[in-house]
Image (cartoon, rainbow, N blue to C red; front, top):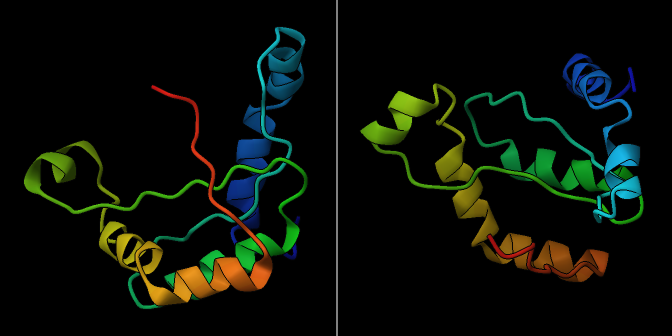
Length: 114
């Protein structure tokens, strides 16, 4: 885990979740069995590269989490880390993302209904 970007953040999150996945599965909930990639939320154009790198070690039944969106004052009041959201939204709607999915043999599937 130390060789990965944002290793400290990944270790803290892994520690906080110790035992949760197993307990959820015992209770009959479907869970992911893989998670990869943590953003540093840095300004700039590196989101697409970082996103694609995070797919190198997904594991079986992974979850990919990101926060695409448009930022307004209401969101800014709730979340201080919003600068990356428009870049994420632009990437996920781009030809580059579509080509990445095709090249990697990946497909998007809907999550559970809210």
